[in-house]
Amino acid sequence: MDEWQQNRLAEVVLGDIQFDCPMGQYTTLRAGGRAEAVCFPCRLEMLQQIVSFLGMEKIPYMAVGRGSNLLIRESGFKGVIIILKGELATIEREGMNLFSGAGLSIPELISYCSANGLTGLEFLAGIPGSVGGAAAMNAGAFDKDAGSMISHLFLITGTGEQLRLDQSELKFQYRSMSVPEGAVIFKVCFELDEITPEAVRTRATVYLKKRRQTQPLEYPNAGSVFKNPLNDFAGRLIEEAGLKGERVGGAMISQRHGNFIVNAGGASANDILELMELAADRVEALTGIRLEPEIKIV
Ligand SMILES: Cc1cc2nc3c(=O)[nH]c(=O)nc-3n(C[C@H](O)[C@H](O)[C@H](O)COP(=O)(O)OP(=O)(O)OC[C@H]3O[C@@H](n4cnc5c(N)ncnc54)[C@H](O)[C@@H]3O)c2cc1C
Image (tube, helix red, strand yellow):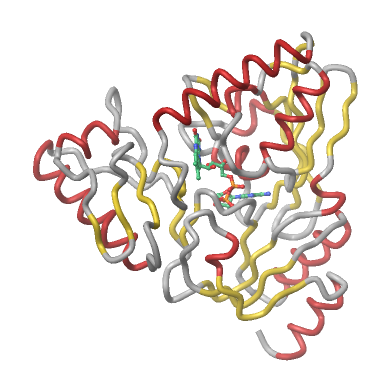
């Protein structure tokens, strides 16, 4: 970006922008290269202006939620990261429809549901992402996924237009869904049921407990690193290959969960990528199955 482009962008977001920004601070792995800029739109018009400006100027951009499924390579991202906040991270209820800003965190969403006795999303408890990230990744756990609870969502297309897409148009698949190229989701509608707040809290707590038993939450990580192959579990294959505890630099395959790579201290993006490659190679040599990354590598 040239100076004029930087200034224009800063103007649109009222100065809420950081240039040459180390992305480790915006990812749960606490590792990764730099982004040319990270901006924080807090209103829909701001987001629209940013996306159309970046599109017109042919500057690459991507939406980031909580960076809990994301690794930015050491070489960095030559473009603009967009993180939604303010009005784009709020929640509204209309009957059994819950409209959540894409920038809201899943923990905030679950607390709202617990406080208001809205059931259906408890299985997401403990996933540290944003609502936008959960929709984009079709986040799932315990045989359920976010996509099945979304009735429709709203996004800004690459040209800055607003678009509503219904569930049937979103084509949710395992850890993915289809949105138009360059789209930024800004609002998601979940269709929920009502029970008592206590019952929602109890269900969420059960899921949280199950997670705590199996996941290495004491270290920075990005959840499952590889997708599960058909009818099997990446974690099981990695464990069978004897890789638990394997390290490259500060990156380590968790002793507790084979499909988690943790930042055991000072890991670089290269350490993590090298360890992923090593794990995929060893599992392939042993089983013939090539594990595919679940985390987004940018
Ligand atoms: C401890 C831990 C446990 C986890 N457990 C699970 C689990 O059980 N199940 C599971 O599925 N995942 C799990 N994850 C992974 C991750 O939390 C989810 O994939 C989550 O939904 C990602 O949300 P995010 O906001 O962090 O997305 P990010 O990591 O910020 O982004 C992920 C992708 O989504 C896109 N994206 C984000 N926001 C938007 C938006 N507004 N519009 C368009 N695209 C967007 C990004 O461009 C990127 O491609 C876990 C992660 C951790 C650290």
